[in-house]
Length: 221
Length: 62
Image (cartoon, helix red, strand yellow):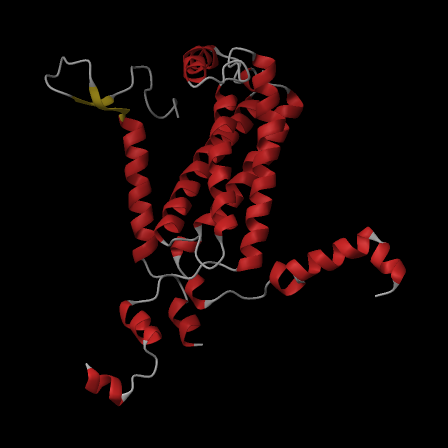
């Protein structure tokens, strides 16, 4: 590496990025055999739902928060947004259960688990701010009830559910950006570390612990 | 949904009280629809573990 290359931050960044995530890891052409299970599908289903959420939400944002009340097309996109959110949480919870019982933080995957768990936690206020951005009596009811929950945990001064402008900004910009960034980091970390393998069966783990049992060991026992 | 199902009524709740049914202390209080969604999640979770994935055997052998 030449001196000019060493000084160039783009070269250093590129080398570091390629070192951490080589192209064959970033876009692999195959997965281990154990990934052929339905329980491994729910991460991708969550991602697919998120794409529909962002797409339908972007259209609703462009047309304004009241558009869906008085047009059929708006109602269609609002329903698509609602049901993709329902599916997102459904798939994400099943994905979370699967990974929890698989102890998906094994093998240096601690950051994969943390980014996934934090995404779930950030997605909850993201959905809540959507409920209070509906511009109807339902939104008023939810905001006046949920503000008590925020006040009870001491965040009411920062997170005012009766302030529509604040909630709308959180819902269409700040929290979705946080969710998308966390999901991107989560996926890149999965690519880096690989998909977590299932626990070995009892006989496999016993074989791994004593791969070459010697006759002397058998005599001693 | 409202065109298919009559939603013009109060939500149905599942309540488990501590002591008598008139007791204000809830052990469990959740709408029936939420309970059903969680039940479906459990069904899907166990089905995903137990049901064979198409082509799994062929990939394992290769």
